[in-house]
Length: 191
Image (tube, rainbow, N blue to C red; front, top):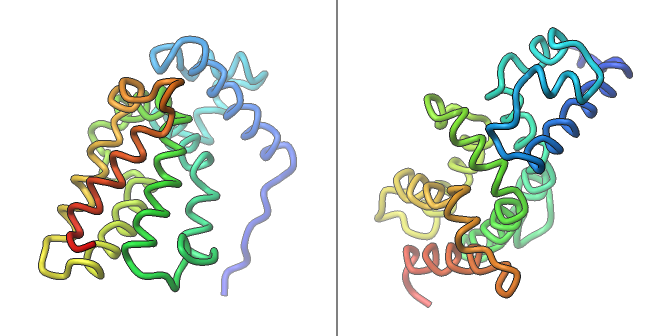
């Protein structure tokens, strides 16, 4: 059994500083405002540090999305029902979409930048693969007669940063999530 490497304290600090800098740049100017040079300068680290850790702008945005969705992933994998194992597929699906929708509504700018930066290998993105696998499993359990993989892709396709921003207003901040849940429930059929 291989030993798990513990990350050095300075590497943890640098990673946090880089992700915070990326968040700030996204908030200030959207995805076009994020570059490895700007992130490194704002984080107080060298560009080489950012490049070695994240590889590219796409890798940086993937890491930030993964960081923002870690709690949801843990709850799906190890948490209590209905989000975690043990609840019927419909309940788990609605709970998952509630959590994923909340992340999307809070991070629409990040999603838009992520979509643009990762367009060529979107389906290889770790967050996307996890979400797709989970949705596929839930659809397969709830509707074994349908193509669960396709349904999962179809649901994830609506998690478009621009669409989320368009549908999210201060007067109805959960409209996007509610609409996605209604769509998924219609796909499952029944009650």
